[in-house]
Amino acid sequence: MKRPAERGPAQLLLLRGLRVAGAVLLPLALFYGLRTVGVSAYLALLAGTAVSLAGTAVDLVRRRTIGPATAFVITLMVFSTGVSLIAGDVRFLLARGAWATGLAGTWFLVSAFTRSPLVCVFSRPLLEGRFGWPGDWDAVWERVPRFRRVWRVTSVAWGLALIFDCVLRIFMAYTLPVDSVPSLSAALSALTTVVLITFANVYYQVTGAARKWSRFYAVPETPAQ
Image (cartoon, rainbow, N blue to C red):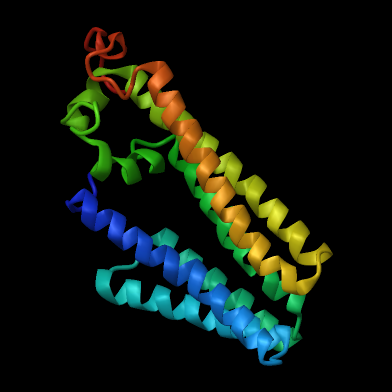
């Protein structure tokens, strides 16, 4: 199980909050602000897309590295935006975010069958050794099959939910009034996130994974699968 770069919980929460603001709130505010002053839906959406791409570029400059998944997301964003510019298709541009959501869902699903389920990778900096969770997740991963299963199950759940979210976004983009889609997409993002976080935390409590003193961890040593 690969360990991400060390950061404090407060710093991680702040960074994630800023990313949400840049990826969701700013483009949304820009879209409706431009629509209020009479800008066409197509141009307003392009402006929001430009903000999203700029945010991604800034994030990449700070990281100074591009992984395969990040490169694929960027390629998808640039391609879909380019097609929209050529075709002038408002509906396609509205659905652009759905493709990234679908890709993320696929990534979560695939990762569930590796040594680095994405839910585990993203949760580790916040939970390892905190809030009732055990420390040294590398050792626990090797010793406790249930621990590995918990993260694989939650990664599969996130993957399936995000793919379903993708389908809903495409449906909304091609059937609902144009001006209602950005706000509804943002609401869908919030709802999907809340449901998944709630499910995961209930699951962790029910299984005992979130309580290092529970019988969940009282298993004989076994090699990693």
